[in-house]
Length: 286
Image (cartoon, rainbow, N blue to C red; front, side, top):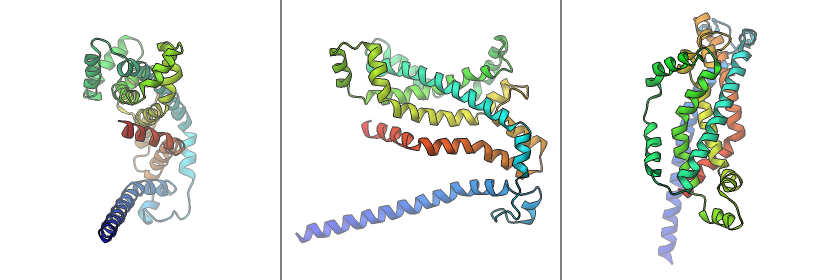
């Protein structure tokens, strides 16, 4: 009996020590990630030379909202809505194609399935920027240069390998008994996919949407290569333009950055439960 009590106390000490260490590491990570964000937000409310006169982490005195007014009046929302449309269309196409590709790879047995899956996994190793020149030539030949639609293809194509890989692994965790029961009741492959597999894969699809959505929202290289007209440029290119126009006006650049990251932060706060569920579901079932 006494031995059990000693073992229990040891396990309790280990548990407390582990939680203490985890809390300390989490606080350190919070400080490391929050510091740049606080720097960006605080200094976006300063005038051009206030950063030299005041401490960068002190509260602005006074709070200056002119940076945001100038950013908004210089066409910020045009860049913003173009990015929203581009990311939304690209994500919808990517999720549809990924789901249709992952379903047969995870639920069906056919010849060359392993070879196709290996090819998709191999595509994950191709660096995105290596394809800039070929995609530029292809876009020019197709007459899509300097059009927003020219970015949809590269965005979807480079998001597919990772998405199909993750979604295939996620769909494999769905019990086959559910699908077999539906087949006994008369469900075909298509009805099984839309009525059972797709609804049960919502967590995985949400995780992919958030992960790829952030990457597409911040993408700069392809947008800078395939778009030229100011009326067609996306939000990451607007950051470059403000940097060029206001090379010494750091607060106005920070104001653009703050407005750019705000939608991503809001969406993450709204959908963070789905992201965590998707990651945990894959971890537990896999």
